[in-house]
Amino acid sequence: MSITNQQLFDRAQRTIPGGVNSPVRAFRQVGGVPRFIDRAEGPYMIDAEGTRYIDYIGSWGPMIVGHAHPEVTAAVQKAATRSLSFGAPTADEIDMAEAICKLMPAVEQVRLVSSGTEAGMSAIRLARGFTGRDAIVKFEGCYHGHADSLLVKAGSGLLTFGNPSSGGVPADLAKHTLVLEFNNIAQIEELFAKRGSEIACVIVEPIAGNMNFIRGTQAWHQRLRALCTEHGAMLVWDEVMTGFRVALGGAQQVYGIRPDMVVMGKVIGGGMPLAAFGGRADVMAKLSPLGSVYQAGTLSGNPLAVAAGMAQLRLIQQPGFYERLSATTQKLMRGLEAAAARHGVPFCTDSEGGMFGFYFSTRLPQNYPDMADADVEVFKRFFHAMLDRGVYLAPSMFEAGFVSAAHGDVEIEATLSAADAAFAELARG
Ligand SMILES: *Cc1c(COP(=O)(O)O)cnc(C)c1O
Image (cartoon, rainbow, N blue to C red; front, side):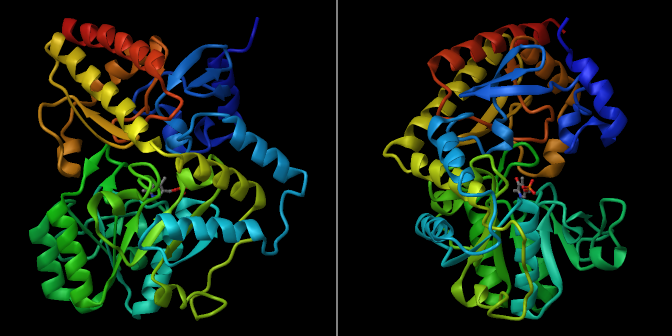
């Protein structure tokens, strides 16, 4: 008898809190047993029981060329023979910095780190150091990693500073974070009018991917840009998810807006622990060893991570890559909408490049309260109906989905036929 996911989950829970090393993997929102993955190839993941799934998580975004792409794997193997880490600079890191600066219009200089959390935390410290101000602004439902200053929810009133949203975060720290509603122009205008001179930065996911998929409106983003410029605050775009995912140049290319600083991760590491933050050269000059804002990392710019990231960055720069990726995503979205309509299930979708969201509603959500209103029971039933049929969607209604270049017509057709059966199940009630 081979091992089961249930046996592994039972065993994992004895030595790992909740059995997982990152909470959403535990399937808490949808219930059931997490799949313990043995290996993955192209668009497929295979669990410990040998069951194969079409994967729409892609390690939460990084795997944009599919799993175990031969060129990415070969680059890592080759790098590994030259040692796993040096703790000293390499020529490959310069290649990576040059590639990022070329592809991301707002990035003039960049520093490599090991996780999106680290990148976001460092960007905020730099924004505070550069402006000499303490307050930061974030938006409800956006996720920027788990640094203390960012695990904050709105205070009691619009213009009051925030409260911790996690145990272990000092209220004294959370009070420097203001939390406003996503896509709400009036709120941000009112805030800047009252306390503009206190604000170090506004950090935002241009297209939010951590409350499902919610697009910031063009008008709202333009207003954020203008207000930050007017009041000397840094506009920080967290493109950890959208960077090299919604377009080659990230959301900056989609909106045609230039933030002061950019936070990156996920796709740039090709599945290895690599992230980055960068932006205006005058701002980056404040960073140690040049300036007074300290930041460091033993494994920063790790040679294996850089090799994987560079191999993947080369693949996504091939002509037509994003056109094909978008076409695949579009085909999936139109097919899901048609299947839902056939069974009379209220449903809509949104997507950009290789990132998508779907909602059991007839109207696209605009902010976190819209998403929080959604029916989690319907999502749960749909999730399990799809999983039972070999389609692995994010096990939470508050996550975006991802398509890779390895997803072809065969996988899309198989997904749509699973969806047809899943919607039929929902319609039966
Ligand atoms: C995933 C994510 C992060 C955190 O990145 P980690 O590598 O998980 O620390 C930050 N911001 C956004 C928008 C993300 O999607």
